[in-house]
Image 1: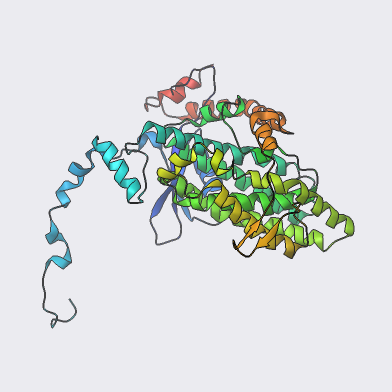
Image 2 (image 1 turned 60 degrees about the horizontal axis):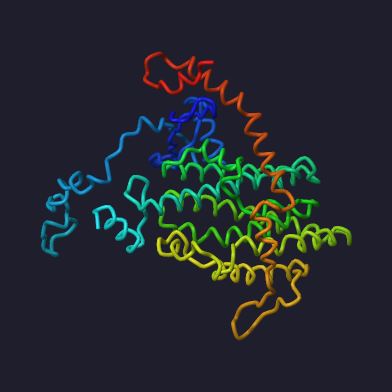
Length: 100
Length: 320
């Protein structure tokens, strides 16, 4: 926390992920402030699922999220750029061959 | 041009979204923080005019609806503070700027809600104007802001419809009830038009915001769209909009409308509206009254957190 102590007690930031319905992945929906994980879950329910938008919620403290850097984007994702043979369209198959 | 500048320019050019960790010009970051914070503050202050009517709503149904609506406004404020934090702003700092008068909120919330009919008119006109403003913002170039706006717009539709339905119900009631609706419309119509901001010729930040695709339509364009939508809705409701020159212009295919009192707009924006001081005083009191809860919850969390987890900030805060 960078604030001066006299000012206010700011709770840590949590990232919220919601599973909209069974069979789908949890998707990031936003963030919120809470004192701990339990409060973060309750706040996430009140904030992000007021209209049945979810059947399951994950909360993760934002400081615990590690992300790739946009500055290194090109180098970081380069290894997959030149491997066209990983895609099915790379392989020429005659139209006469069925079901492939 | 640096790599960052090039990527930013291309992103805007191709109508793609700028995301939190991308390089962006300082001016863009500052503009977005200012706009998102101002929008968040408007949602939070916007709870007050209608919140005053929750205990006085005339039926359990209306009370439940109003409670849900005011809770949504709180939610909208929080979605937006969340978006502002992705730009490096701090939520507590933004609240402090609001209560110290260093950041603004929409002037519309400085007007009083004198009658229950005002709740209906706010839903119809104020939320209607907000929808006009906000739908284009769903395509704002800043990703987290656009995504928050999509969520907000979905919920605003309920706000507007509940207001209009409330007014239809009152218009079917007694002559006194119809008079109350007309009275509320008379008071809220012009402030609603002011919600779109100063005329284009007087809007210094607009050109840059349009270039950055933060803003998609001019103030006057959105205001005209709102008038065109509202005039037939007023007719269907059976109320008169308080503008003697309001009429359909077949040549322009738009409604013509009267001159807005920009002196009043400037007065209210600069802090001299009917309730500017009361709104901020209320927000300040809520913040101060809640301080012990925030501190107690942080202390409780620190006590329950296993030692040596590296969350020193929270543990330190718990010290008396």
